[in-house]
Amino acid sequence: MQRPQELAVGRRLLGHIDGRTTDLAEDMFRNRVTAYSCRERAGLERDRLFRERPIFMGLSTRLARPGDYLAEDVAGMPILMTRAPDGEVRAFANICRHRGAPLAQGCGNARAFVCPYHGWTYDLAGKLLGTTDKVGFAGLDLAGHGLARLPAAEKHGMMYVRPRPLAPGESAVIDVERELGAFAADLDALRLDTYPIYSVDRIAPRINWKFAIDTFLEGYHIPHLHRKTIAPYFIGNCGTFDGAGLHGRMCVARTSIDKVRALPEDERDYRPHVISVYQLFPNTILIWQVDHIEIWRAFPGRDDASRCDVEMTIYKPADSTRPDAYWEKNRDIAIRTVMEEDFPLGERMQIGFESGGTEEVVYGRNEPSLVHFHSSIRNALGVAA
Image 1: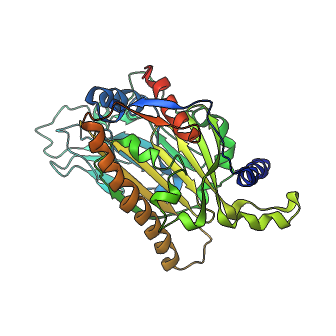
Image 2 (image 1 turned 180 degrees about the vertical axis):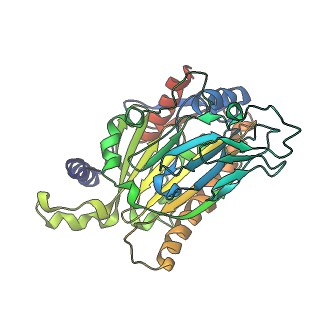
């Protein structure tokens, strides 16, 4: 974040530590468990949150060179992102215009995409270059059979896609500045384009996608669930929260923050002692971890409210001289904390929600990030509960 915000957040955190308090929401928030388990609610979320809105797809360095591509499903929409020879990021439905086969899987670098089914070939801009069996498809308008274009944008070292094909005459532009709102300058200050990707891990836990995001939106559980992993390094149930439209930022203090007290305020560097957790609506958690970036993205299952796909990526600084063993340790801590502690407990909680044994959950005033996130979902869906 920017220097004035860093100092302000640091002062707030020290005040909370001294007073044994935390930022508070205006009131408690009650959420019906059907928000996590109802098939109809899940369908509404997929349509309105994951098809109609721009979705964060990763840092720009994920497509670092011309020819780099990324293929993944977003709530049922197969997406192919490319960096074209002109340097522009483009996105398409990863669906061959002949019989619908996917053109690419995973990530890599290519000069063109050849359909594995019948060999139709497309360039990095989605143009159909040619078909096999020229006689069988004589007269086919190649220009009219390029890949279906999806709106895409890149700014502040971040890539976005809207997972709905363009309508005739519709602009392919996504206004990232407007999308990020008050956080645009904040995220720009992180210089995200200087962090190449280090690792990618994926898991498919039996939890609703919102459960995966909830995991990161309060420090209340840290002293309890994570007492053997990260609890010794953080001050639990203590943090700041700031909202920016549908997005939010929670900052939590490391136990090392007391080191700054000996310095005059204008000389204090809070960055080594504060973790900034950005909740980018609807499904992304971007964590500034002092010396690297950790990003979690959760996607709803195609037709099951109780399943999701989660991706965790680590981006390290381009100028880092630390050995791979250091980054593997950070990756291992993230996996052990979330994938071996948070998500397994979440799976048992999901079963409880589906049992009919309870009707609602309560987010406390000491969990303002959770309150904001679920209030934002209701607002975006246009529902009261």
